[in-house]
Image (cartoon, rainbow, N blue to C red; front, side):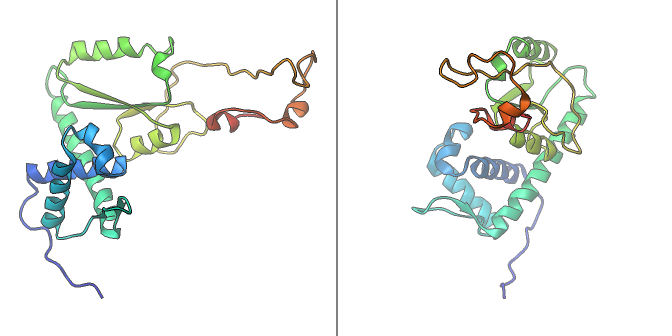
Length: 219
């Protein structure tokens, strides 16, 4: 039987929000060391912040040591609650900023692989136009697998994402950017190299090397 501990007392202050942001980054990066670059603070400072948050909440949030980093049951729940809180705060800031003539706040974008290098993306032009309208907007771009991008948009960690549409998820609004044709290639010593017409049945009998997201589309 668990011992009852004091609940979170007082108002949630700016310092608490800062600690929760650090906690979110540590969880998403899988540990203190991996979070150092994103947070731009030392591992010791991260450890202190985590201890302060645990003391503030009267909960043990994670296990850290030689065995690695892992969340406790309470830590997983606090992480889920913190996502809701931080998303609500960002939504509030976005709505208030919409009352002004110029843009402010953060814009978090998730992009699959190296799509930023595709000429059809026009990502640099789009970012330039946003910065021209709102010089104070901070744009964060993350390279993330498609499934993770969709989940991050659903739970509010990302505002938008660019993914190949394999199977649309309910709750998301998809807008087409451009179409792209994928092709199959074989070497000169492949059984199909000299063959003119190739049926779908023949392709199904052979091995293929492809990205996981493309394999779902293959006949």
